[in-house]
Amino acid sequence: MPDLVVGVDGGNSKTDLVLADTEGRLLSWVRGAGTRPHAEGMETTTERLARLGRHALAQAGLPDTTPVSAGAYFLANVDRRAQERLALRQLTLLGVAEQTLVRNDTLAVLQAGAPDGWGVAVVSGAGINAAAVHPGGRSARFLSLGDITGDWGGGLAVARAGLGAAVRAGDGRGPATRLRHELPGHFGLGSVESIALAVSSGEIPVTALHGLAPLVFATAAGGDAVARGIVERLGDEIVSMVTALLRRLRLLRTPTPVVLGGGTLQNDQVLLRDHISARLATEAPLALPRVLDVPPVAGALRQALLTAGAPDAVQRGLRKAIADRKPPASLAE
Image (cartoon, rainbow, N blue to C red; front, side):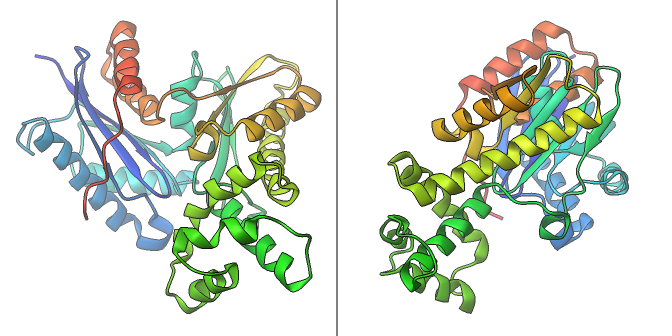
């Protein structure tokens, strides 16, 4: 009888969990809330992950007590070794799998997009992070605590920068931009100042600003110089992260896969991709950038299959099955 495996990609805004077996069948794919242990606590985060796993078993027509051989959990906001150990301890106590592995979500992108499991991975979704693995096994990452550790990027940062630039254009501090006209309609309001006031009063959650990011990208693609500058700033941040990791692992002189994943990188943002490629060609010419062509949860599932000893053909087949399948809607909490 084939073993069951679970691959989990927990991002800032959503978590994907895939249940499969070692014969290559994709049994279920469920989506829930993001992983935010820094805000909600690790116990709450891991209990939610365990519930998501039970939903996946139920969707596959299996009892929630059905044993899972291997689970690979790649989680956003689990950025330090101590956090990984704590998450592993909590998930083990919850009995999610007989063998459980916990890593940061950037490494799911690397597993999904780098053929040999080493290189640099960048995740730019709601937030941003990057990590690298040397072919010899050494790794490098960032502290990733937000503004206090110099982090900027991802969809939420792009949205906030767009809103700020639009306000500045109206009060005389900044150049004119079409963002003043493009952004208010997303919230059904009459002006960008109204959005800012609604966020300040709590009527609009700060996290909801993420929905403005596609409008900033679209405005940039339409030729707006201010919006373009924001998109290029994101590209510059990504290149800075990549080159820093290559330098730290002494890979600048080695042809190295650079896998770009997350919503702002996988959603056909041509301007952003072209800017990254041009900058890398100058600063790290041996870097081999590629945009991930499958949801990052495929990388988590690959690791779970490796842990369970599944053959390469099964791994490749399930990767294709995930690529060909439409992601599910989020489950109600």
